[in-house]
Image 1: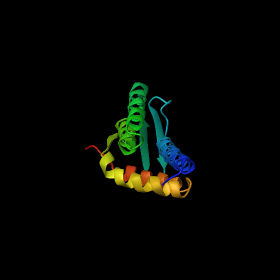
Image 2 (image 1 turned 30 degrees about the vertical axis):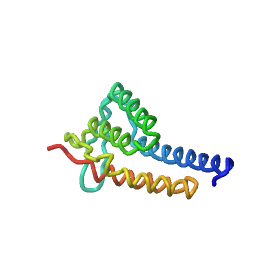
Image 3 (image 1 turned 120 degrees about the vertical axis):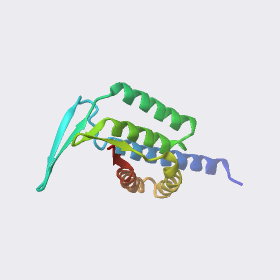
Length: 150
């Protein structure tokens, strides 16, 4: 039987894990954040080609998507994190143009769900250290699920 002190420790570990995983998701979402710059153009030159990136400001859409994502997280007690993450990535992709071509995020929360569960427990066990790997894995998932609209 778990004593009251043990229950408090378990609850504390769960809260630390949720906060660490939540921070990882939040910071990965800020990787290319330029929501304050309307229609900003970016040129990245390398030796062989020059790419033209454009991000359109949609503050109203961002606000609505952030509120929806936080409500998803709140109502599902964090279990809706994959769907909230995909919702925000979809908004970013819908507002981004590369070389005059629109991009689309095709990732689904259901394909991230079990990964999130594993990452959550690994983050708790390592006292938040594993969240550094979660950021990289989320970036990989995002890139693998972003396509050009032809």
